[in-house]
Image (cartoon, rainbow, N blue to C red; front, side, top):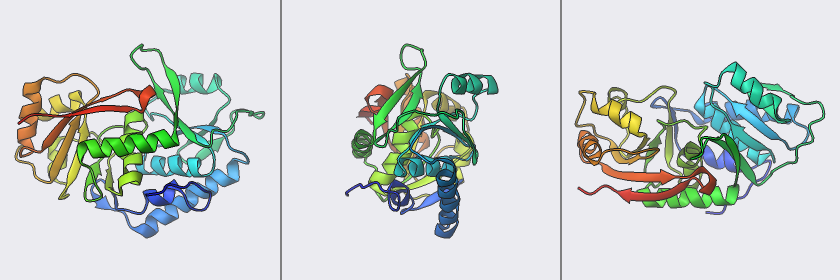
Length: 278
């Protein structure tokens, strides 16, 4: 597949080509198109020149549409966690000249915004291994290659539906959900709340793929549900997990293929994948 970015046809349209769900309910193409038009108009009417932009939105799907539309129109988006306190956000914004999009409202933070445009990259906030907050710029070309390698290592194809259970704004989430969908054409199910086994049992996907953290793993092990069907791929990353716990979770999903992944924001952020032995 060839990836070309332009104002009229770009990543945002490729992102919408395959199935998108909200909380397990399939979104209609018409509704998605209408939502995209509103976002396009908002950006075009408020940004006269390419800029680096902070973006946050309580709706993960809308955040994704902002992300790709900004990139298509030559901007460099930085996705933020909606749980940032007002003080944290004010401090971050005050120390920069970046523009800021917050739930469909655009504010110019500097009348003399002279930040250079970064048309071929996006950026992600990370604390990294040093626990010192920093901003990493990641190339579009590298993100596409990283997402392709990520999908191949887990066996994710256009036949799968990836179920969002980790934050979209995180560098891993951007690759594991957003770019992976563009690269593979897989379906994507957006969820606003923490996903436990009870919620997953209500979803009806034939070939689901699920990324979880060690904290989610521990929570799921305490739930009584077991024998879940429809999830064929599970990846666990973001920290250490005991092998016995991983095998126990694997059985709750009827022996789904399970992988341990490792990421490093500055390097992609996907770095390695290893399948859990039977």
